[in-house]
Length: 233
Image (tube, rainbow, N blue to C red; front, side, top):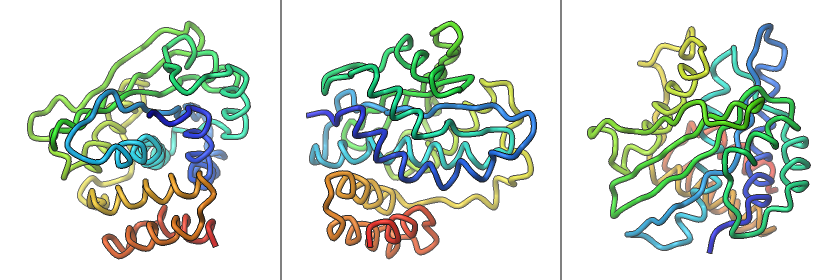
């Protein structure tokens, strides 16, 4: 069963808020509304893993985008209100027109949503950049490189998508951030972090802390997991 789109965004909002302030004061910034991603039919792991990644993938993608000083993340409270206004059901699809309306109400220039699929370890993510003024898809970016489709490389896939989204929006690719210095989060840590979001979203803070601690054990420099620990105390 898919996660409810509103619940997905509410959980993501807890994390995205910490990044939005980092770029809010930048001049000539471009506002992007990061919306839910959907599992479009994954196999090879428990379905709870994929439900959790519906939260974790957009959260980490937003964190990567926020490293670009020209990108500002849309205000999450406005996004939540806009999504609630759409009255999306549990089986609703986040099509381009809907994403455009939501992004527009949140004051964004672009909306970003997409899908992912894990087929027994071969991972595919498609991110759709939507022009909110027209409600049309401006660009679809995917991890097309055959060398970057292994689930073990999930964070590197997300990093690559972030660079591609920045380029599609006409922005320099993370200026001032040397690629060699970028962190690489192990997939196990990213998965445990995603489970933390899922548990926190369900109101089980004790279970969320356990997952965040597991994420930090796997990757001690995981700032988002550390923030999750603080939120869930």
